[in-house]
Length: 256
Ligand code: CAA
Image (cartoon, rainbow, N blue to C red; front, side, top):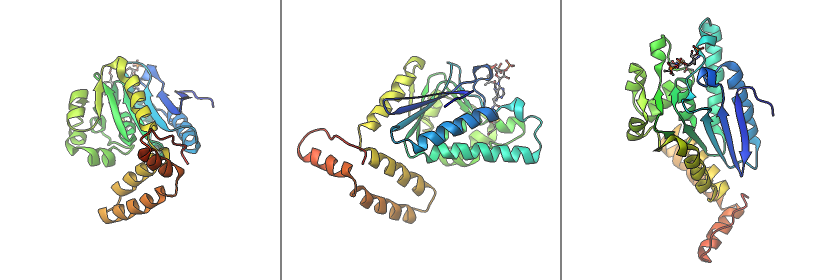
């Protein structure tokens, strides 16, 4: 696969998608979002990829938002289409069957914050800054921020376009872990490997149950959960996992 603005590699079951437009602090122009979509479509079909890490190139920025220069002259129709496209690609990230970790290595503003929120969880380096600065540009978050951030934390962040530093992001539950910059990717890979040591089918079913449940009422969520709980018992992983427990050894999952 050829990409212009991302670096994509798969190693030991971990796909790393690095958004790579350092001259614009990895801002999302259309070509970049198209690259992300292509990689995400590939990941969704892959049987070899078990965990995905999304990060930004360089030490300063994860993603500084949608490309302001590219959209500055857009009219209502074009910008509406752009927001729907970007939000759609970010939703594809959220819907990936594999767990997704955002390794946030600096600015995660606008569309960058929105990508990080579509991940299952976030690790960040100590220099990370999160924010939805759109109202300061006279627009609103358009790649899912008004939906996902409001579900995650507080409306104040959107209304005030206030940036959130790593330590506050940790305190309010926006990120799971803060580490020094040099330790960010090793920490994300360690988290990925910990996930990969579990039953692979169960991890993906759990992700589906959580995502479906969040978007439904609790009764519907619980019904979905018991349904897919039953499904787990049709897998070889469940047989192996329980057998290994009884035999007091580590399970050898096959992902089937
Ligand atoms: N779009 C386009 N270019 C961007 C950009 C963006 N979102 N963010 C940074 N850049 C470019 C700058 O224009 C600059 O390019 P030049 O060297 O050609 O001038 C280069 O990246 C470096 O940026 P700065 O010189 O500004 O770096 P800084 O360290 O002084 O500031 C910053 C860093 C605080 C992140 C600042 O760049 C900034 O405020 N960026 C914009 C952040 C923003 O408003 N994001 C939201 C965009 S709207 C959106 O995302 C809508 C949505 O929901 C989809």
